[in-house]
Image (cartoon, rainbow, N blue to C red):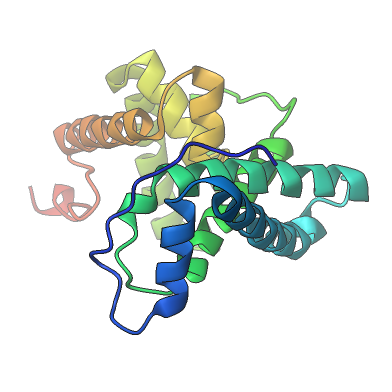
Length: 224
């Protein structure tokens, strides 16, 4: 491993008596052989964490071979190392340093696997699929009411949302596309997509309220 940037880390925030965490911080804030050795040990810890997460999730990705899974683990550990070194000053000592760092590798591995699962797959834009949500064995009367609501939602998705809002909402809600995968495909950020989802839901609810069909107001038409 090549050495990353030297990061200056304040000693504040590490609980008294947590000598191991403080040793990690001091070594990673240092220079020379001590720093290089600490970075190497940290990468080994992150690689073990990434391999653990990859092994835990590989059951749902049987098409991936062992070498592909290990490549994902190694890349995840590399990315986690960069993230940990860049955020050392965020460590507040609420857990052991190794526990804190471990979570970066778990997250990177999970994200990488989600991206691989969607690699080459299309993200459809089909508002017509809203009415295809199963009724779940409701009574004929309730089933009719639900179909009316789904039809109104379908109309609202087509008419009240912008094309971008429609694409994001349908991808995340119906197709279960991971938010980080969608952000990568659309060249945007997770935060921007969460904002789009929020705005889309506000618009859709307002549209349903205009039709007297907003969730929670289902009984309003029968009394009006």
